[in-house]
Length: 396
Length: 147
Image (cartoon, rainbow over all chains, first blue to last red; front, side, top):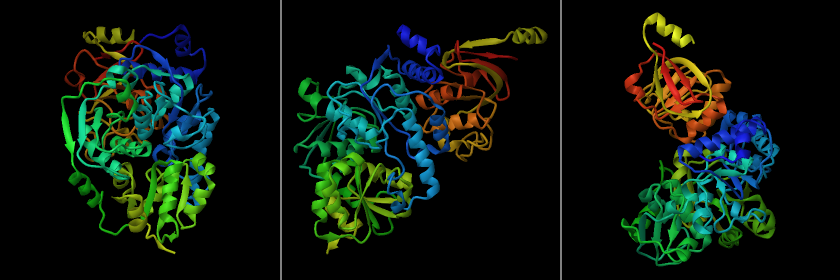
């Protein structure tokens, strides 16, 4: 891999041990993936935040680092709402460790906004063609597919190293040749709302890590594309997809239709709605929306569905702190029902979810991950049904 | 020099096998072979270095202080941090050899300063046996048998 004289000096330790290590990691990854050089990135989104997944091992490494990030950088969701953790039933011991992780990142100059939807943040825009180092799988999928920016699915340490150096290795989805669709998926029915999450759950299993090109009858909007991509990145390892006539690269490039084709039918989607993911012998005892984190429009939708209702069970709505703070009236309206709007975290990465046995979700990603990561069964449904079946919502 | 001296005593030339250096540094120790890939998160106890997954071919064995030879890493990227924890607890392997390295183990080795090479010109599973004494050099990317 070619290194500039400045990069060579960094690698030799002239800018201190942290940057030396960061360069070593970027170069090693570049060698593994046969990158030709490092390229500048516009921003980084760093995974490895929840104490539940990081443990003391991760905390120790981050605390040992010194220096400041070179590009705007923010974090993945943490294991708890950083302010309302007690309401989630988080222990004081966990909260203390979680705060230590956040502080260690803050010391490196990282914005301690913990969200899987960095593209909603005012100060964190990504546009077509930008090179990024993002880690969270749904954010990576959204950046690549919906925005047309370019990022690999960085691991936590590699995203952090990229942020510290301001560069990442030029391989994978940074290169045109790896962005070409490899599999055509035709969708043989009209879709709405959570149907896109279910479609993603099915398509991700079929696609594995290939790049699918969808042909759809209906036209998904951005929140629906977010749900589709998040599900495919969880049930499969899809980091980039195209929707013919909808996502930006299909409008700017003339892709050859892939030779391999498959069709997804309405009956397959219905089957997922009827199937409990995991060991679901009990009725739903909770509901959660916001995986990935809700946009302002999605919060409005939840508020409308809960208007004039109260919930009997735990209903958690996850969003980024910035979106919650910018929409206080919507948050207030949702919380009048007894549901909680929580920030900085989600049902998948927080240990608070473990106390439930069966959660209703509108997310294909949560549907895929809850049984394995939280030992909680999951039912997938649209928001209205989630509120009824999981939240026990009824008229006030 | 110690390598050459031993070779003279035993009348055996050390054999150097070239590969690719992934993580810098040089170390020597006893080989521990694992035919199975390793998920550091879940397969290994970070406090002791013991393999704790009953399904794993090294179940019950300890990787501490060994030259750990395995095909590649797998599983969660948190595995990189588990390697760092092993290192901080003094129970990490002294060096690692992969058939084909992937990012989890590469990152873990670099942050823990454990020499790591991959892509050796001869198959290490055919060349090496448990308990053999070898040198691993991650700077230049080679492994050398000492007996």
